[in-house]
Image (cartoon, rainbow, N blue to C red; front, side, top):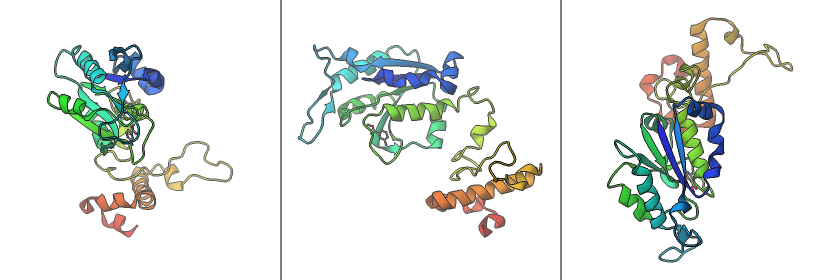
Length: 247
Ligand SMILES: COC(=O)c1ccnc(N)c1
């Protein structure tokens, strides 16, 4: 997968050189290319923002530098154009399902904005040529979209074949479509069996896989009911058995 990021703070993406994503890049599974938006701002101050039409607080990112930058990036592609992802609090929710959809894409272009956002004509322009998604990583506002891009690349990159050591662990994730969709993962334990007077649930030491799976699902349901009760409402009742309903 190729990932391009256009930003006025490309140095913000240094973390993409470490851990799982860093190794995926070393192994050629992920090709991340960074671009400085100001390289396409031609005035002496390399200006990328201006006051909003209609008045109001803050500044809006100018369309010209973004248009030239996106054109330059798309021009380096051979086949279908990149899918453009615009991080914004006004976007659709970023979910595990959307992360899986993105993990199947050959080429993503992230356009993190600062200030009050990018002139809306930019995404209207590229919406005529490729998929343009406005995506939010949660109900809060950031100083810039760069942190949201790190979150999305981490969530998408770990799903790419060969990135996670044990492919199963992506399937068991909280929110992973299928058995765990809309369920939070329950508690986890490792050695030692006793730690500061705290033991490990006996069932996990039993070696009885059926009982362990049942216990894990029960704990997932309990944690979901406690932390995200609205997700339980979204659970397909046909996916619950009589044991679940007694919890
Ligand atoms: C400037 O970008 C944001 O504030 C942002 C981007 C994506 N998701 C959010 N919740 C906020």
